[in-house]
Length: 220
Image (cartoon, rainbow, N blue to C red; front, side, top):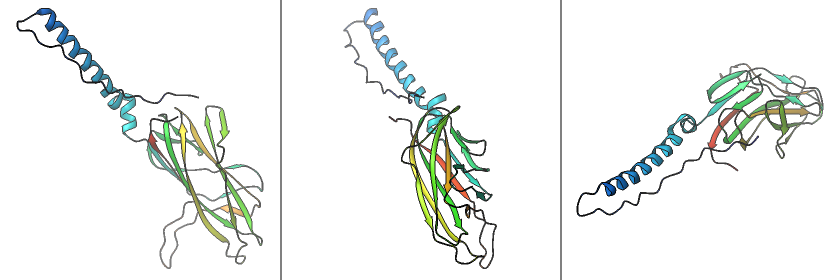
């Protein structure tokens, strides 16, 4: 789905006609028309920059989301990463717990981090990748798969832990959305959320954190 980016055309300074020694209606009309054309172009440029569409872009659309629940998957099955909390939102919203959706077309920066753990007695892998969609159409983003391996658990009560994160620049059309998928080589791999803990006191841990922020309205 192709959407043209917002264009701001800066008008050239007008070439005003030279004045006459005496007042002439024709000269005055020509002078006024040149200025009128210039100011109309200037108004159009400012409207593009500060108006309904441009003003939203100057507001720098963004969204910040997280998941406060642990997430599991069946081995070797593509599974959606879900997000259940909106921390901040400006023209970027969360739909159906997984779709990070934009209103304005442009280039966006997606950043996310995932807390992972392995309870198996053997090393295991986790795969994370992105899909982009619009309406009912959704496709994989080529080159987006990340692979992370965790060693075997330390003991039955102490899993192997890690936190991983990536960021991507993504071209987005109006109403496009991003979804994050994952799979694992073993069901013992999970994406946990942790409650606050003591000694020393530490805040809770989100299982997934994701942000999508506007970079530029001009993209190819």
